[in-house]
Every structure is written in structure tokens, then in C-alpha cells.
Image 1 (tube, rainbow, N blue to C red):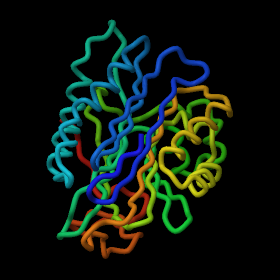
Image 2 (image 1 turned 60 degrees about the vertical axis):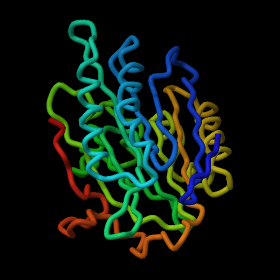
Image 3 (image 1 turned 45 degrees about the vertical axis):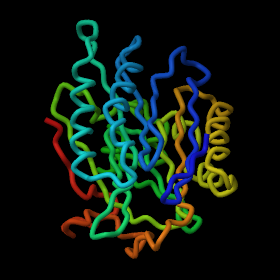
Image 4 (image 1 turned 120 degrees about the vertical axis):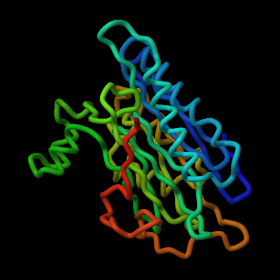
Length: 278
């Protein structure tokens, strides 16, 4: 259901196992100022256990309206450890993507801290335009970045579902972080690839623009992804900044997507900073 919190946030969430899957290996955490989606992998029920372990590890973040950056970093590491600790059949590891946003502050102003590992995605709808904030950690994204295939070719590439980073991976993975200024009227979308594998960004933008309530937007996105084929689990969280109280809106421009602690990296597609999960 949609929930309004004391900083003027309104959210809605919807999840479905899809038309072809018997298990839903997605999980999400939504409440207060914390919004994450995890897409588990590993076969049998390992993916379901992995995504649940990840969001459970992050659950303490729900206790605070404004969350400290160090708390997020520490619990993302804890989530990685929790997934690594899952017992699986020999030769089968458990893993999960993780993406989402947490309301934090820098220099006395509110920012979204965006977190990403894997190919689930975080988007922002601002001033009528949809922008992908996170960058996929996948084989096809690496091919696109190298100029070997186009973004359109990536949509049908046979390796499009192969991720290059995940919580629980046997190698030591890196998590990407960004700071994103909070502005009233902006809408955030956090989703698994069950949505983006069925609907184009253009269609997602239309649905987000035409559904005024975040819960109806989440429900409509899932319904259309199912109608388009529903080949994977589908999970969607939509978050609206409806007007922050007491002048809490950030004075930073919307395109100031970077690490607010320093300005060494302001390239839009680059992570503000990358952290190895030991």
C-alpha cells in the first residue's frame, strides 16, 4: 500500500512471480525513507533465500527517517555476508542483485543515496523525463560501453541476463553509490529486470507520467509487464517526493549527481564512489 512519511514521501510497491516462473525470487524493502529491490539467483530456492537475506540485513535502516551513509555502507556489507553464508548444493552458489535509494543528508541538505549491484535498476522521473540513474553490472552493458553492440541490440542479446556483480558472489564484488539531490515532484522507480526486460524505457516513462498515485503506477507497471510476456519475476517500487517539509528540499540542481563529499567524479554514468565488499 502507499505510505506517506514525515518528510513528504509517498510510495507504492507491487511484485509478481511472472507468467512462467513457479517461485518469486525477488524481494523488496520499502518503508520510511528506505526503498530496495533484490533479484535472487542460484537455482532451486537459493535465489529466493538470497534476496530475502539481503533485504532482511538492510531492515535496521527503517528505524531512522534520515539514514547515515556509514550505516548504509555497513549494512550492504552485512547483506553480502548474509548471502555468502547461505548453504547451497555443491557447485551452486546463491547471489542477488541489489538496487535502491535511502534518504540521507549532506551539508545539511537532503539527498538520495543510490546503491547498486547487478542489473536491477533505479530510475528518476524529473520534469517529465525518465533517467536511468544506476548502471547495469552485466555482460551486455560492458559490450555497450565498449561500443561493440548498441543499446537496442543489448535488449535481445543471448547474454543479456548475465550479471557481473552480485551480493554473495565468491569473488569480492564492488557496490556503486551515488548522491542524488531530493526535489519535490520527482518520482523514483526501483525495479527488477522482470520489468525492464518486458517494457521499454519509453513505455515505463509514459506509465509513470500518467499514473498520479505511486501504488497505481506500481500496479500498472507490473500488469503491463505480465501482459507483455512476464518471462521473469517482476518487482516495482515507486517513490514520490511530494513536497518536503520545512524547506528540506535540496538546493543542488537535479543534475548534480555525484559524491557530495568531493567533486572528483561528476560524469553522469559513473558511480560517485565504488566500494569493495570484503
